[in-house]
Length: 359
Ligand SMILES: *Cc1c(COP(=O)(O)O)cnc(C)c1O
Image 1 (cartoon, helix red, strand yellow):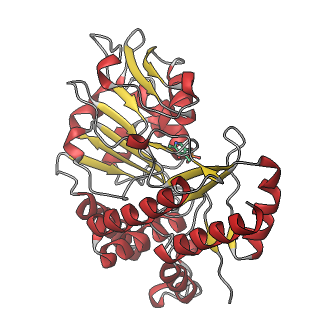
Image 2 (cartoon, protein in one colour):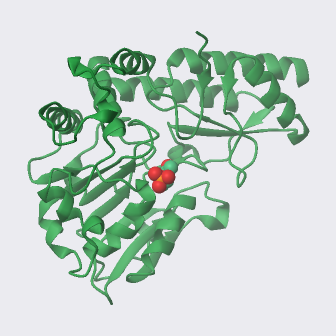
Image 3 (cartoon, rainbow, N blue to C red):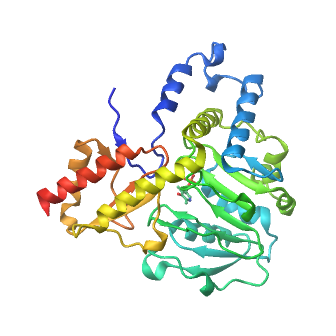
């Protein structure tokens, strides 16, 4: 077996231990003589799995009892519609902080349902900074404030939680479970699974229960958070395989020491990679230092003519998926929880060798 160091932005690397458990379980899950994909989501074994996944996630993130944990399908993108559909009535206003492509997409989706006030927009500097909170033009009567704690494409991360009294809605797709958070500061947290949770196909939503009553009465059943809260996310047939893998990832995280331990490792991984980039004239990262992402590290080669060679030689060395997003160019190393420190060390060593040979 040969495994590469996978720096994919998403779907992203999964822990090898989890993959090995899946392989062992696959044909005969818990002695049932069936795979987990072939059993009823209402069977006792699956209901137990679902309950354990929720309990473990609650433990990892210290989710208070007055919050519901939901596992819908549809990814983070569906939540960009569900947030305004569940938190506003027509004519209401929601505030959006746009610090990258995903926040911009969320704001655009919300305009279909309510008035959107873009209270801050970092597109003037190509999403390389977070406008100072004191400059945000927030509305007086916002139903909520939406922001993106980690912008996956440009590599911009909030290292603070915005203030204010209105419910905070956070798209944590690319940095959930990467460090401890105070869930109480948020009204709603949502995340697609395929970065730090598991395979694509399942979504995590954490919502304060008192907000569940604000949904529009004409929402489809599957676009209503309360439907999921009332049915333990078995509103219809859930994505059972993705849920099973997410449960294994949550257990793996617990064994690693939880999100506190991950925060320490993630801090080390990203610090040493940024230090290597900053120490060289050959590589650069354009993001303001106070908001660099610990999960997605974009870097540009001084000579873009070398990009192709960098990608070919890194792939040949077992370092894959380093191509940057087309809107940014250059390279991007996504170093989520399941990307080991060893992988980051190997990348740094490769970058130094490549610079020596081509710089
Ligand atoms: C990947 C990503 C998305 C899109 O997620 P889907 O599950 O594909 O809808 C949205 N927001 C952020 C911050 C992301 O990183």
